[in-house]
Structures are given as C-alpha cells and as structure tokens.
Image (cartoon, rainbow, N blue to C red; front, side):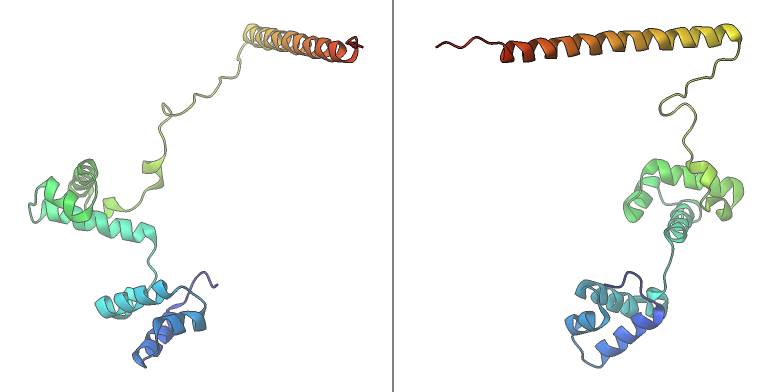
Length: 174
C-alpha cells in the first residue's frame, strides 16, 4: 500500500469517481483504503482542489491559532465560545490572543524555542565535580555504592550455592 499520494493521484481518483466507479474499486486500483477515497471526495466537494493539497500540521496549527485569536480580538467572542468552536483549551486561546496582540498574527507561527521543556522540568542532571575535593567525594560515594552492591551479590551467590548443595547432598530416605 502506498503511503503518500500526490495531488495528481487524488485528482485521478476523483475523476474515476465522477465516471461512476465505486470507491472500493478505486481504492483497490490505487492501493489504498476505501475510507481514504471517501475522504478525498468529501474534501474535493467541500473545498475543491485546495482540499486535496497537502498541508503540514504546523500550517494547520498556525491557521487554527490565527482563526481563534481573530475571533477573540476582532469579533470580541468570549474565550469559552472560541474554545468550544475550535476544541482547544481556554489557556491556549488566552495565550494566542496575548501573542497576537503583542506581536501581530505572525507571532503565532510555530516556534521551536516555545515548545522546549524548561530546565526545571524532568529529571535534574547531575553536576560534574568542579574541585579536586569534590572529585574525591564523588569517587568515594561511587566506591561505597559499588561495595554495597558487591556485598549483596556475594550474599545472593552464597544463598544460591547453599540451596544447590542442600539439593545435591540430600540423603535418600531408603
């Protein structure tokens, strides 16, 4: 099955549909799901060729941000109505509106810096020791942990050996 289809592929499918071919026949001919053909037909009927053109997720998100913030800024719609209309959180609409007010609608474009996690989030990274004393303390701590681990491993090995020897040297009851 083909993963991506060109605009020409989609238009050919639409043309076949308009020539009274069934969606399932077109799908088997092209090598895709019947539902995909139905989606293309629906998009074509709604928006024409533009509905069939590929649009990246970032572009979709940008247009959504612009529409939502325009509804708030220009049409003075309440945040709640906009969140219901576009199925987004109130916080997002508030943030987008502030960004658009401050820097215009171009400020709503996707920004990789904006999505980065803050340094406070997640597991904190260990700091590398700076001084010689810190180096010695870190090495000492590591050796202590290694020692504890080796003692535990030794105890487990002795326990396992004891169980095995008890099974092997068990006297028979005859």
